Length: 279
Ligand SMILES: NC(=O)c1ccc[n+]([C@@H]2O[C@H](COP(=O)([O-])OP(=O)(O)OC[C@H]3O[C@@H](n4cnc5c(N)ncnc54)[C@H](O)[C@@H]3O)[C@@H](O)[C@H]2O)c1
Image (cartoon, rainbow, N blue to C red; front, side, top):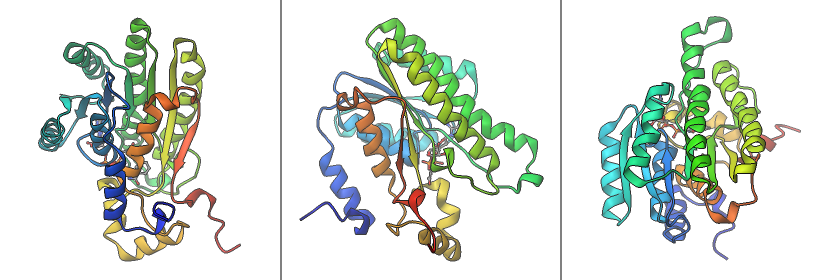
């Protein structure tokens, strides 16, 4: 039987299977903003949403060439997308992001807070600026984007969806990555609180928490065979995840099928969080 041993399949088979499964109309009539979507998980999420009929705003702060290419790809597949350059850590930029979305597509129904950065340092050596920059993008960003989008969704009166791409490190400590862990841990409680506060408006709020996903963010690990071997030993399914797999989970949370789902974190990590080591 096909499909239940995907942990063992090659990345290209997984991508092909997921691409074949998408392409319905699950998000027809909806407008989505995906932050940091010129690369990695955000890129695939924007592509998946568009394939399901959403009109999509691609946000980038760097890689405008990649944002443009993605927009062209979406349009070539018959979808509708716009590009907006916005630094999610800047309130003026974020307000413009939402305003431009509404100007282009008339509304905003779905926000995916995907943009994120990390920089490893021992805690005792981490420059305060690195901490502040990480918190600004990974926590202030979702705060600002969620606030601007939620205000708009409430005004529209049709509910909405907020999905944060957090990390297993919203729960799992990671030495040398204290700023990132603090931001993602904060994002967990931001999500839970907003889920309760925004529920009366029909807005659901959830986190997707990836483990090790094969994107530019994890490129340094992939390039170091020793580090990669150590990482794979921590993953029961013995491979990194594909950005398309995370996109498929975001798609579910954005779709009508997830209308009763709010206030939860959905871990997608090949079993990493449940690994019991040598026991
Ligand atoms: N790759 C992984 O293993 C992994 C694991 C857990 C969580 N995540 C999370 O997934 C999300 C996406 O990361 P990715 O793995 O696709 O890596 P990525 O580097 O490809 O994506 C991050 C994106 O965020 C954008 N960005 C950075 N600062 C920004 C800012 N100030 N404003 C707007 N955009 C900004 C980057 O330009 C980039 O496009 C991040 O939040 C990351 O923390 C990734």
